[in-house]
Length: 200
Image (cartoon, rainbow, N blue to C red):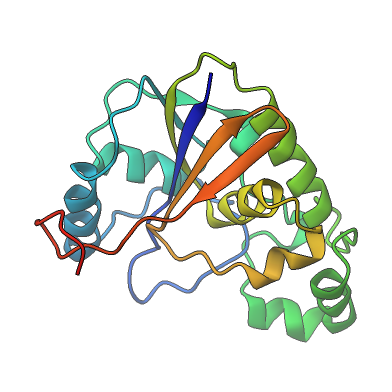
């Protein structure tokens, strides 16, 4: 039986808030009205799913709530990439404090200069989760952080972990996969005019 998996990337932090590694504070800074409207608008366009999941981060919890999900399970295996000692720092701060570590991390998927997870470890963790989804799971939708969505694309394409940084995944992007243990396909859908459901 084919599993149909939809990954929804968590919404971005409020405008004006600097993007930082990790989700260390677990303090839910409310989304702005524009972000809430975007999340609510996409809720009706997501396929109905038998199973709703979310990663444990504050961003994912807020996104799931804005989607109107009332009964959703937290899936620890979908947690964001652990950036260890870099958590709560901006990219500019890490570049200033640990330029060689940052360069190694971006160049080598097995590197973890921050003491957390390497990109390759995240890809393996995501692949393991994908391959343990029950064959009879049917439709599954999960709200995840962008790094996990990237890792899922890498896994589905059987691409090397070094390709992780070549997958651009924006907030509120939707990644669709279909398949079962050991074999996954990436599904791309046509862009439609808002509200019409018809291709542009």
